[in-house]
Image 1: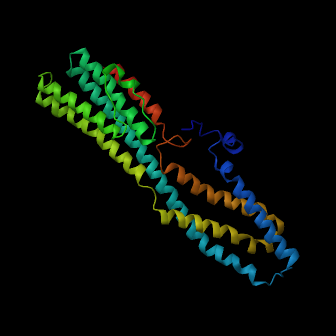
Image 2: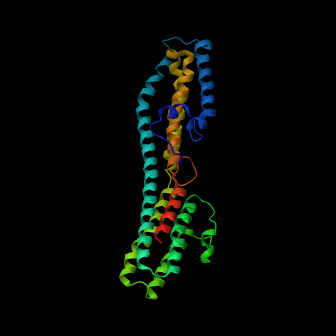
Length: 287
């Protein structure tokens, strides 16, 4: 995730970060610019259309559908941001639940071996979940000291959650924790799987294809019809104007595409690796 100073206007305006939509849209902007220049040449120099041409009235269509397009893009962006923010809240709850679980265990447990087990495994769940959501392979380094094997062909977070519950249940059977304490710890144990399921729902349920495809087509046809009417009032200045309008509209769609899946390595995705590191640090401090 990009770290920045929101008050630094100069940096925002004149710096083009690798995640900036301007870089991604350069080929399309050049193509639309050439297309606009061609339309301008045909209307003004080749066909020599007059001011009374009905082609000039195409702008009526842009006025009518422009409002609808703005509503669609606003809804698209807000929906994508809601998914991003929900993902951040879920990882925030994972941090709190990991701390609470470690805090309770630090008071309840007396055996250092048991504390070491949970000291390794609680951060291990966050690490495995982060790699699971970003489709990365998870190394076994975290589990070497405990001789734990992770089957990469099966649901990895579930395996860690099962180990946590199995260890907690063994502590109850051996009399190291009471039944009341087991009930107290169960809430945090269950919360791990709840967070995982909610994150998977965000990741595996994208915006419906028809809706996303319609917006792209809408933007495309809106842009390619702009030069026909704008030529009469702007002349060859229609080229930068249409290119700028394309940049604005297409950028909103690109931003929505990137943030609707917040679990990955893109510049605007959630800092899950940093959150995982913080969970490890805090759990080790408590246990």
